[in-house]
Image (tube, rainbow, N blue to C red):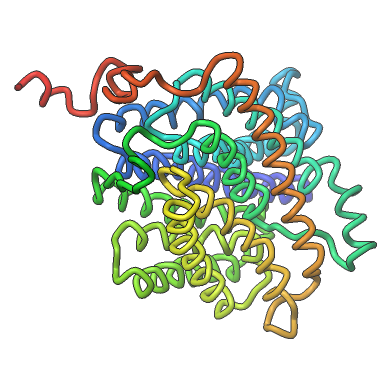
Length: 405
């Protein structure tokens, strides 16, 4: 009887996490369509191929290298050992956490769009998914977490808390993207003699579709981060919802219903709430998401027009800055005195977030500097002018239009 109950429990966990993995896997279609809708028509095919290729390469390197680094589990054993006595739970856990690791190159892709060579960026994504991200994952969530997290607890009163990856995934991805964006430089025509010439998005419906796919999948990203059926939390679900709509409403008001900012506002809210989604009160979640949207709206404008950084999808403010805000916000609104669950330290959250930023910038600059010097990262001027669809894939997003001319 006990064996039957155990088997049923583990089967439920496997199914629960498998559903979460599929939902987060679907988010990569959201990344793709968000980029397709933002870039020009001559770069839409590249966005689709790039995201799928990055996902596929990330799967291989995370299976062979990244997951063993992060959690000390190797899959290079007979299939019977992989199944064990828990219905292969570790395998589906790999699938779920792979979806997080593969977000890193997907995030970076949006910042460096329209001017990047294909294979050098795939190589960079493989390094990040197979080495850079898992090393940080191991000290926050994984096999080496007891050392750093123990130090946080002894020194500041509580471990660094990041339930679903505001910092570990999103901040990491956004800050890794920044060195690539800076080393590449702006797209041709983005600034002419110091004057800004904004490049319009190509397709609002595709951009909106990408946002919707990401938003729906995000409930798998956040809720299924419990990783067991017994750990599921209705608080995480409702906090994710309230943060998302807070992001939308604040973005609509701040930009007079600009569609690009509105749909990215939903994502800003969801990124901001990941870290503290299991801690804060739903009302706090609404304002965490809303403030996240304002960070994106004004951060994107500051980045583009003041700093003159051509970050096409605004991944540095959206993922980097807002992911960092999410980590800090968990240390503010997670306190019981503000309606949260408690057991969190503001100082731990700040120090952990700064550690992630420093690590991402250092490794990002190192990887991209070597790639720029050895392989080159930017398309030739003629290829960038033609568009990466024709230059790299030899077909544009609308082949019938080219034939009918």
